[in-house]
Image (tube, rainbow, N blue to C red; front, side, top):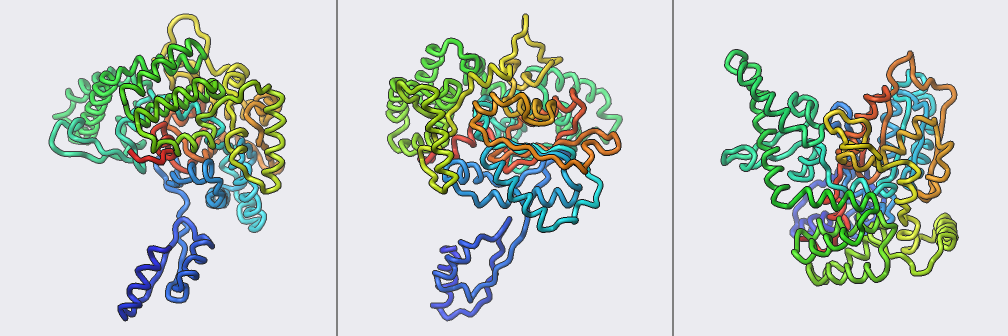
Length: 509
């Protein structure tokens, strides 16, 4: 707003007479108008709002393209985007009829749910006459499950995102993929027939599938001109696979995955810590080293003080003291914390309870931000069976559960919670899990609304506040096939471990 005010005031000083219109999207904030008034140009401009809430990236994926939500809400405590998400839900509610059942977990999810219900009540009757098409809605905060977002992705779509950065449903494949001096922008969605067959597959299965498909297509290529587009896309995906394999081999990807799996299982932590120290000493990317530190912290429920100080010192010496603020941010969000020496679980719970009460009274503290999001991953993992126990090698070609998205080592916590709540039709029987997840769960049902109208396949809207990964999308697509659900995804933005770290970093690299 100050930038706009400078333009207007410069024009006025130069005697130029113009009309000014400011269009806010997705919504206009009162604070913006306040700044325009303070700058003395409120009367010189007209303001409008383009209520653009949802961008359909695919048949089952809607994004609000608000990557700033994560930092604004979970770090800064800024709640302005919660009403934007609530309006998006209100829009879906009006288009597809009333939701039969709504459940959620997290502070943000609860706020969004409350604002959404108020909006629905204000326009009562608008969607009630419509036949409901979405039977279940589940809202979840990103900070409920940091572990999944911090892990390396190994399904094809996730790996493409980690390697090339998918933006707004598209990706730029450079010369290393296209085998030419040109780059190609490719839209990655269900319209790409090749991509739709491999997007949810574990990467180990993809190259063999593409090679076989290439041989089959080559035999028909000259006869059917309609296959030319498919052939071009196939070549690009083969090039992408080769590029990914080169990069991952160079980075010793298997050793990295082995370390991650050890952290998830809580096995050989000393060896994993040494691997992270070596990572830092070799000055591998600051973001990647920070991700591993955060994964160590979140899986171990915080670092013991000695390790915290040592690893922090090594990191600052390797990458520069300007990252001090980054560590402060990570501590506030609960991504990288230090265990309080000699503090019992009962004492922690007592302090959390007091801080929750203080927050309800409007006293938002830094201590709440870090302490209330203290991870209890080990306990949660045990209660929900997140680490599969299988005899022999996990079959990645014919997966048996959602753990395949992490090579059979780990079932994404966020997806497991959604599965359990759908099975139990609420939170009953999950009280201990909820306690370990710091509460803020809710469940709402509309008794007058059919859960699965006309015997149709139940449609579940999974809403992620603060970002959703492609691994989670693949896992829930798998769950839908297994259990007979159709999943639709709504997220504030697509995310991965690098984006998560970028949002926390103060020293831009």
